[in-house]
Amino acid sequence: MTQVPSVGRIVHYVLSEEDVNGINRRRADGESHMSEHRERSDGSQVHIGNRAVAGAIYPLIITRVWGSDPTSGVNGQVLLDGNDAYWATSRVPGETPGTWHWPERV
Image (cartoon, rainbow, N blue to C red):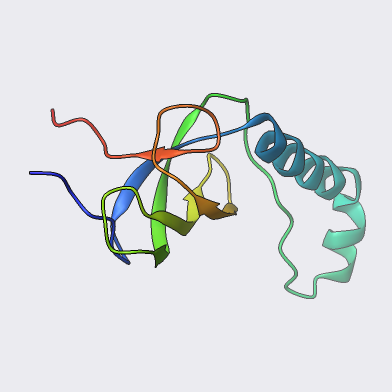
């Protein structure tokens, strides 16, 4: 039986080079301004975490589905190895960078 993506499901997402560039740039900017954030103490989030690399697989929580079949594209929040998430939009199923797939059963 082929699964159909639906809101709230957790799938695996493969980071692309473009994703990684945005994530790491945001984190580097936060780190370079850390003293300002500490001084201001206004509740703004500073993005910190381990360096993201293309091809790494992270969990993605589906927030929107574009269709009703197994090949439907999705939007979702990628849970990164840090205190932040990455919003991946209009991603299709696959196992290459920038795509999502169902986790293997273990």
